[in-house]
Length: 236
Image 1 (cartoon, rainbow, N blue to C red):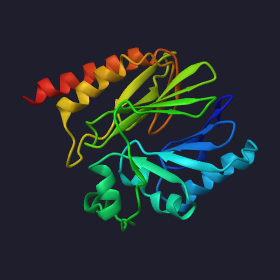
Image 2 (cartoon, rainbow, N blue to C red):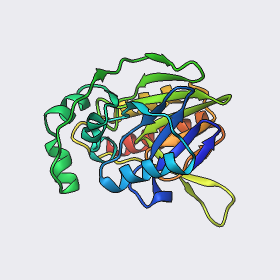
Image 3 (cartoon, rainbow, N blue to C red):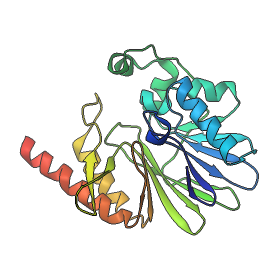
Image 4 (cartoon, helix red, strand yellow):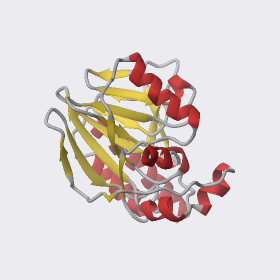
């Protein structure tokens, strides 16, 4: 699915796969955001390359976090020489085993290498596109979000924070919060992260699941933060 001239959705509901991955095309290479978790999802990414004639090599993969449906294919990236970025403690679990994910998904974790630990506010300049890394704990302690600057847009790749759903019969959307039952989920960190995301001034949302969104992403992040604050108050 083509999002803008140089940005593509390479897995997700359109491909009958669990989670979203995204491809950024630059003049010399392809950059991948999240890796999915099985052969079907990897084939969806390859199909996107073929469909849109993306003949450049995938050189880099930025992980939003280490959960199975976003990082399970890290070993495949290793096999293909793709440089993988992630943050600890998620990166450590990718490399050394992730028992929580094995129980949650009912399949064995394949340990893999993370080539670089991503740093907060790190900026990657790909000449005709730029990627900003932002620490975003909450869903997991090692979660990161990425602002992709391309084609005159600022696209926010959030991983698992919240998702956009249709709201029939109204001509509007509703928000669904991401899974908040992980062993290292932290509701205070989550609210702080959503507040931070609401100040990044992005106009395309690239969530970890379901549909993308064109529009005022700051407003969506503020709405999601209010939803989580309400849950926190109810739990006290």
